[in-house]
Length: 374
Ligand SMILES: Nc1ncnc2c1ncn2[C@@H]1O[C@H](COP(=O)(O)OP(=O)(O)OP(=O)(O)O)[C@@H](O)[C@H]1O
Image 1: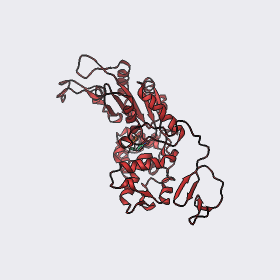
Image 2: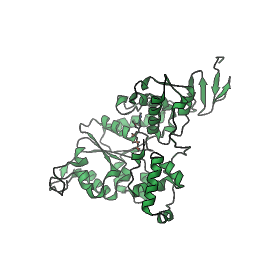
Image 3: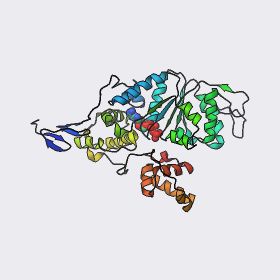
Image 4: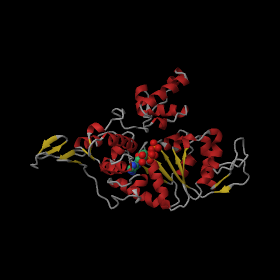
């Protein structure tokens, strides 16, 4: 009050103002975002207590999130399967690594990209093979499951698991043993399973795309990651951590102008922490002084996105599929993924289709959308 800079609420100079949830308060060189009705909680500020430099900072100022993370730390020590749900880029893999680190299990974390399992090699990829089992099997190969013995099997993108693989995996989880291709004796394994996906698994199970018994097996404890736009309170923590871990020299010393800070707090962040990380990486390179300015924060041509809603039920669009030759359609999707750097919402917008439909095509044509992300 009475300072030369004045006090502003949502860019308006004020001496007095009634605040509403989400308002920006600007006091000199400090911005605050007002949140109404957040309760403090005993678990607030809890984190998984790992050195942040390793995998990402799990501290949070959002009480409900802190409570969930606190519960997850305790679950991590048990043998219970963990299912991590949440939009792309929200930190599912980071969390999986933390769960493993807290599990006290001596074996390694073995990550399987479920979408990349090929139908023909499925069994050998998962369960390994013995030398000579088939042409090309020049040595014994343990496969993902046995490599994770005594550790954690991380099933990433579990919603992309082909049906035959679902059956095979279910058998392993029920019997705790694997039979390598070409081998005669099943081998016992001790597994802890953490699975992750951005897909609506319950709906997929209803539609018959995911086995209900497998879903039940994987869902010992469910943890849903919060999209970045719903945890803007943590922007400061995340920005600090991401700049510290960025490879740009001096990045961790950088500050932000007020305009840059406001911009960070008002983006839709549809690709979540991954997108934030990329924006900051570029900004840290562009910054030519101690402060990151608004101009250094380069929008990633994502446009004004509505929050992605995988949940929205969209009817299939068979006409379109029949109209266009598959090769042409695939080519068009690939070109648009390149244009939008892997952002499916962008592709959907350009094609005038739903995200769900684009995801379906991506799956059908075995396109690796992640490969187009920066
Ligand atoms: N809590 C965090 N603190 C700092 N960085 C984080 C945090 N969570 C995630 N990140 C960073 O955000 C990026 C995306 O995280 P991650 O790969 O774990 O997301 P994801 O949910 O598994 O994404 P996808 O569904 O696309 O595989 C990574 O660069 C990661 O280091």
